[in-house]
Length: 214
Image (cartoon, rainbow, N blue to C red; front, side, top):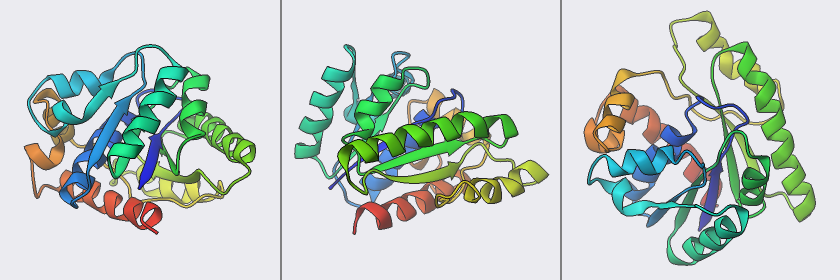
């Protein structure tokens, strides 16, 4: 059905959190899912290894660079409905190779104005992949991430992102329960179903599903 790459030139913007929790939300919708951890730090895999939830059965590590990444994406694409790929912030070639196989690239961005500069670089990389493919894919969407909605920066983030020329998906807030779920080795849907945080991930998943499910 779809390969969805979560990318960014800056660490700490919630890439792994978004990839893992979207995996759970798509599974809850009835899709078969896989999550590929292409970041050498393997944050997504470390999260999965903390417990026995969905991620422990869904996450695959990439250990040997772009060639292995391409192989794993193609294999997973043939086996499941939706493949999520968590990419590293500092290794452009890994993210680029994933984008060359992606249907959709999600670019999370934090509320700091300093987060916008690396976001533009990540968007440029996705546009380069699209040009090389001579295609409208990968589609590109921004995701406001770690947003404090009761601050001016948080409230203005979606507008700032929209000015960059790509559509903006529902925001993910900065919530303690997200970190608690990670510590338990569970997704937010498993750890705190019905919570405000889980509702945010569900809304984001529905928006993503409308894009890739066409």
